Structures are given as C-alpha cells and as structure tokens.
Amino acid sequence: MTSTIAAMRKAAKKVTSVVTGEGGLETGATPVVAAPSAPPQQAPAQPVRQSAAQPASQQQAYVYAGAAGYPAAAAQPQPQVQPQPQAQSSLQTTASHAGSARRVRLVVSRVNPWSVMKMAFLLSIAIGIITVVAAAVVWTILNGLHLFANVNDLVESVVGDETQVNVLQYVAFSRTMSMATLIAVANIVLITALSTLGAFLYNIAAALVGGVHVTLTDD
Image 1 (cartoon, rainbow, N blue to C red):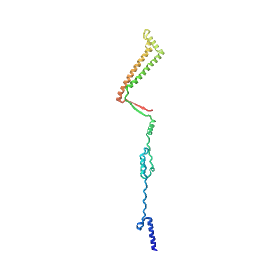
Image 2 (cartoon, one colour; image 1 turned 180 degrees about the vertical axis):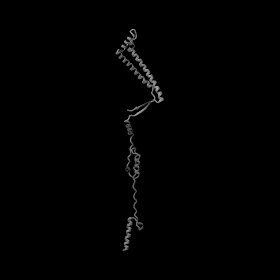
Image 3 (cartoon, one colour; image 1 turned 45 degrees about the horizontal axis):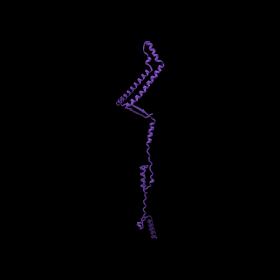
Image 4 (cartoon, rainbow, N blue to C red; image 1 turned 120 degrees about the vertical axis):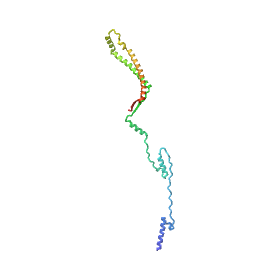
C-alpha cells in the first residue's frame, strides 16, 4: 500500500513537471520549449511628399512615425501659427496716424533765380495792367464829379485871369493814361530786377545761416 501511494505521487510529480515545464531535466521528461514569438512586422515607411504647403516640422513628424513602425497617418501634425501679414500692421499704422495731423519741418535752402525772375515778370505785368485800369477808373470818377473844373476855377480866382495856367490841360485823359502806362512799365522792370537780385542774395544768406524753416501740416 505504501509503495502504491509512493508510485502515485511520483507519477503526479512527473505529470506536473511535464505540464509546467519545471524539473524536466531532473525527472527525465522532455522540456517544453515555447515557440519564439514573431517580431512585430514593421510597416514600411511611407514615402513623404515634400510640398511647399507643409512646413519642415510636419514632414519630419511623418518620417519619424513611419520609421517607428506606426502608420504615417497616425502622426497628427501640430497646428502652425501663421504670421500676421504686413498689410495688417501697415493698416494699424495708418489708422493711428489718421486721427492726428502730421507735421513736417522743411528748410528752403536755395531758390532758383530764373524761376523767381519769370514769376516776378508775370506778376509785375499783372500789377501794371491793374495800374492803368485803376488810373482810368479814378480819372473817370473825378471828372464826373467836376473836380478838375472846380480846381481850375479856384486857381484862376486866386492867381487872376492873366495867368496862363490851365489845370484841365495837365489832367487830360490822354496825358493821364500816358503817365499811368509809363509808371506800369517802370514797375515791370524794377520789380523783375529787384526780385532776381533778391533771389541771389537769399541763396548767399541761406548758405551762411541755413535758410528759412517751414513747417507743413497734413489736414
């Protein structure tokens, strides 16, 4: 009976060692070797098409994902912050300056004598025409008021009838217009010459002291 129990225990140990794989070398049982697990098949790296629209950081993320054995679509690209266009900054600058008028300070360092002479000549001609027209209008008004006749009568009453002075002869319309025309021509010559000379003098003075400062504003 004892030998039977010992034999049963020995058979149970052999079965246990065969099932679990332990102690197989000691009992003479063939050890059970687990089959090597196949390595996970690596997915081939997906070719990455470099496009101008994708930044370099996204392309590298796809390459690393394919090399690590994961599908390239699993790598989620990080959102890129698009830089603000320069047009927006220029609009903000324009809006900031829209509320306040701009002030620009300039210096008149030199004037062209030729341009000054032309402008002075045209302006002097206009002044001469105004002088002749004004003389004719004033003479007509004074003659309508009989001012010249009254002055002539006053002179004759003071000096006497024997005098040869005739005021109406000196203030006749033709003589008045001739005098006004001579004055206008003289003004044209003098104004043109003095303006040109003034331009030369201004250039010399501006070279010494820096010219006239002018401040311009944008309304």
